[in-house]
Length: 423
Ligand code: GCU
Image 1 (cartoon, rainbow, N blue to C red):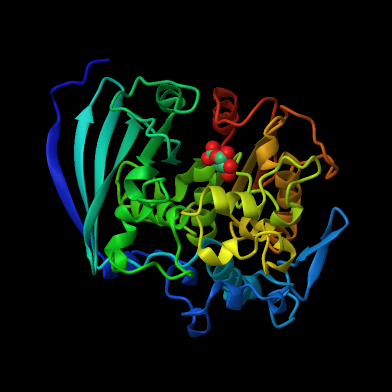
Image 2 (image 1 turned 135 degrees about the vertical axis):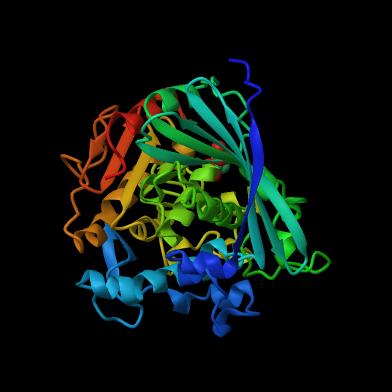
């Protein structure tokens, strides 16, 4: 469909840091600075065996850190203690040992929006401008909004540069038309604009706005995945103010490396009512302690941190080959989404992502949902493997195992669109 020439004039909104906090936004403490104990520490300092979790649960016969004990040992039996202490404690541990410190709030942030009207869809080009102590930067989010009642919005972190301006685009990975026709809005930004997916250049987007470009990043600093997650929250700052969208019905979704980022952002930022992590594997949905998995083909910490040294903090790389020393594991990151809707997906042939490790993490996150009476995973059995191609849905937790290989496909989207993920 050719774009109409009825583009409305550009609108510019200014959103200051204080406006962000006044707007009822709840940002996890991990978005701020690390506690003094972690600052200036080397990976070896932080990754020492003494950090091994004291309280464990058993998953597949092995000990894993227990989400439901404070680090000092107090059991977490009520949602209130989870919310006042344990959630923040886990957020800090993931920042310190896995993803690295998140970028701070920008000194200034604004949105520039231009609107293009099509027959049944409006496309809003939302440019997010952010300023830090070392400069300013921006990136584009395309927001495709169907006319009429909007059932909810999917915000996709995309690392493939897949989106075009065309609201009729309908690829398996990015079925804009199908999503819009089902009554949902789709917002999508290219993660590479935020932080290039390149070990030599990843700082060139937003990271160097907040740290001296001429100095090395500290080993505790977050890198590309943390920056992508941070950007999703910055986009949310603006989507949540869009009068055409319901801020209480915005789902965050990412596939694979972007699914690692969607899970992180969803664990930190309570505004996302639904968090979808699709085939996110190592340092996403997969339990780190499973290492190379049962068949030896899964991606472990050594592999991911050596192949993609620009994704996580250097501290995380220090756990290569000794995952059992990590004070956290990925079921706890999933649990940070509670009590909001969590949707974990896997594919049967995605050996690198370890579908069994993703399934076990999903099941192990359920007791935290249990604090809210929402422990039902929807699974008829917690024994691996579940039936393939049978999406399951509990009141807050959803899962499917798709037949086939690594990918975000029309089948996955079909299941996301089939039921209401926004209640
Ligand atoms: C590689 C990497 C994975 C990642 C995937 C992707 O396969 O090993 O960790 O999830 O790329 O992003 O597609």
